[in-house]
Length: 165
Image (cartoon, rainbow, N blue to C red; front, side):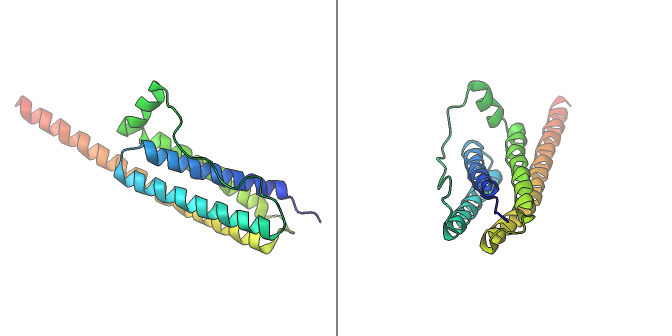
């Protein structure tokens, strides 16, 4: 049987793209809890991309890419306005997390390959497990921030009512 290295190469590209998405999201969002989470996610994806690259090289396969150029592209006014409004942070984080779901699907597809080298399978499995658990953590952080936002809104309403009395 022949190993389908295209799927592995695609996983590598997707992991690098995810690293870039989290990095750029961390750069533009101004909420400390999210910046920490997003920066950590970017670093972890970089580690997995590098491990996957090493596994490919170990198996005498030339990786299609070795790194991803990160940095914020120019945002148009509308994009910048959406990102800077605290209530819109959910969209940015969910976009990253949604892409992770695609990576999880790709990992599952690769894991079903019966002839995949063990070292590539091991990195792929760890990546998939990591992404599943980080998705749960990310959702919890979003829910906590939404609750804080709701508390702030309630406080403002109470203050406004008190000022009227």
